[in-house]
Length: 220
Image 1 (tube, rainbow, N blue to C red):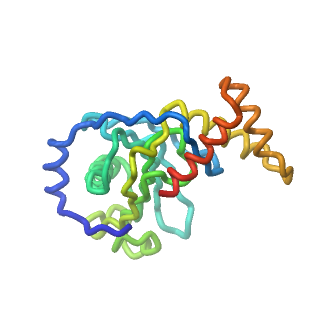
Image 2: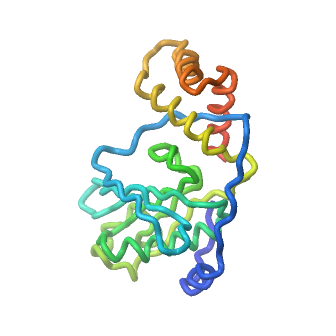
């Protein structure tokens, strides 16, 4: 999804007006999407902002690609943000990280729950780079932020399909085991489901529903 960037003053005005919406709790109907854990060289930050905890930077990672200096940030957003709120948060994140990091491009990966970090961004991604293009990092010097703009790939979510905290953690346990046990066994998913259902004292059908629900949630 491409959205026109708004001036910085708009974000800063909204920052003072926004509040944290209540997190929707959803029970039983559940999704999946295998993925990897955050890379070993990721530096865990878990730094909450002063802006009423609108977001938390959970991880920061240097990206080794050509000779440009790039960083990727995994960010958990609290509440149920729409695309405009995520744009505003993107500006807040840039205001924060550019005080300590010097780069030619940055990638912001947004999630609604820390259980999904290392997998597909559930809320979408934002690139901060020359012309909003990751591949143009080498066209500016590191720290030339006045020559960088936002490239948006954010998602407008259907929040009534969001997983509850318990569902997200059940899915996380399932995904970790599945990724660790990757084989050609056609019955692997069923075996992992049985393991997780025993761990959480849930019916296998319930775990299957959670895996399916997360898969849909991540894709929409």
